[in-house]
Image (tube, rainbow, N blue to C red; front, side, top):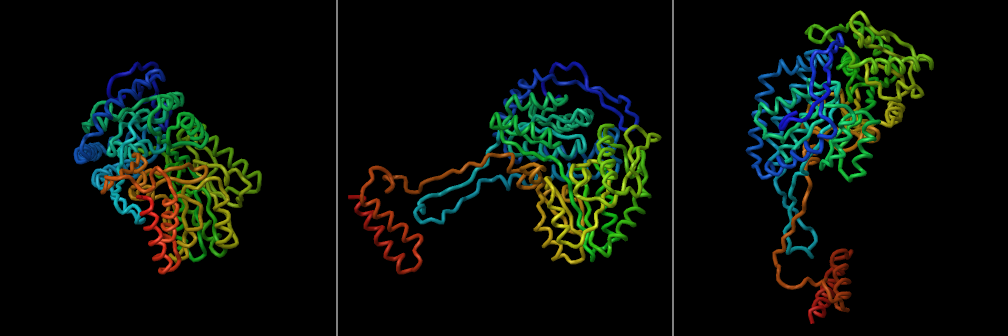
Amino acid sequence: MRGRPVRAEPYLDSLDSITGEVIGRFEVTTPAEVSRVVEHARGAQREWAPVRMSVRAKLLDRLAEVFKARRDEIAEVVTRENGKPLAEALFSEVLVSLDSIRWHASRAEQMLRPKRVGHHNPIFMGKRGRLEYEPWGVVAVISPWNYPIAIPVTSIVAAVMAGNAVVVKPSELVPWCGALLGELFDQAGFPVDLVQVIQGGGELGQALIEASPDKVIFTGSVATGRAVAEACARRLIPSVLELGGKDVMIVLSDADIETASSAAVWGSFTNCGQACLSVERIYVEPGVVDRFTELCFEKTKKLRMGSGLNPEIDVGPMIRSQQVERVERQLKDAVSHGARILTGGKRRPDLGACFFEPTVVTGVDSSMLLMQEETFGPVLAIQGVADAEEAVECANDSAFGLGASVWTRDSARGEAIARRLRSGAVMVNDVISCYGITEAPHGGRGASGWGRTHSRLGLLEMVQVKYVDRDVFPRGAKPWWFPYNRGLIEMAEGVFGTLFGAKAMDRGRAMVTAWKGYRKRRQ
């Protein structure tokens, strides 16, 4: 933890993603200490809030330099603890974080400047209004294990640029990444207690909410997200929830099948399928479904499994045996209902306890758990559909609504279908990469949660919006103040006609009525 030391017993073990051996031990923050952590964050935030945006931006620039200088180390820590290949760690963790840091440093000040509010109603022509953006105070960021650097960094930098302090609770499965995160902000020179990392299990996240931060940003499972939402609701703490997805890929008959199949394989198996934006349901139009399936089968068979520290490896292990068991349960259910496994579907104990073969499944339908529940594992599931209409219907038949993609050579048709999908983001002829676009808001609907991270919308989640109104003519009582009389009623009738009259002549007569009522009101 950054800042003042906390009592820290026992320890949290960091496990090697391949062997399961302990590769590090990190101090655990006890739930009893959390209220003090939040209290120190409040003190740091009070000093940070008046700091000029340009000064905040310079600290982010320093943070970017630290990330650049230590990029190989960051990637290696992620790979050893999380299991993803080095290439993925460099692109999806370091590069995404760096881009977010630079973007917020260069653009947050402009986006959070006070903004003039125009008044269309002539009644208020003597007023000048503006919007001002004020920090919440202390923002709690509860982050997951699958992208242990990029996900929290995006929220942290948005929060501090907006003037908040942050308390980060990383997943207990990646304590080394969590400790490294705090170290990076410390090395960049952020004030003591402004960004604090606390380590522990689910009970620590509960204690963090009970300490009443001013806002909670949570990324994780639906079950835990529901508990977070309930805990926040009891304390009227606003929250942003990103709870995963069951992302759909629609392949139309005019699509470039060679490219679409490569996208399906990468979108299903990157990070061993352990991504909220993973491709989990694929619907393919007639005429191309057989060839598409054949290409997915061939390309999946060529994937190389092993330690992510080997730069020639494509797919690493899953995070824990419980995740493997979840995939096995869904596949068993699918096969019992008529699905067919074309390749994969088995553990690879020769490689390590949590390796599971990239799997291609056909003959699936919406009755199967594999097409209903989030899989979060290396499974590519293909379902043939009669046409695009059925594909859209199947795509929207889900509690989740995070991401989707449409594949076609007709861009206009692709975008038309995209507009019909109930999803937080839809890509035409690409998958997943929208998460790496800092300007693109990230978030979903339904069981995928609410609120947004990334982009201007994510930055605005870190502030409270205040409307400030100034009267240009402050002297004298307003005509609608006490005491009321008949003149005010006549004035009201004239105002209604002036503002909403159908014809110019009617509006002109109404203006006269309003003026007469006003004169009576003043007598």
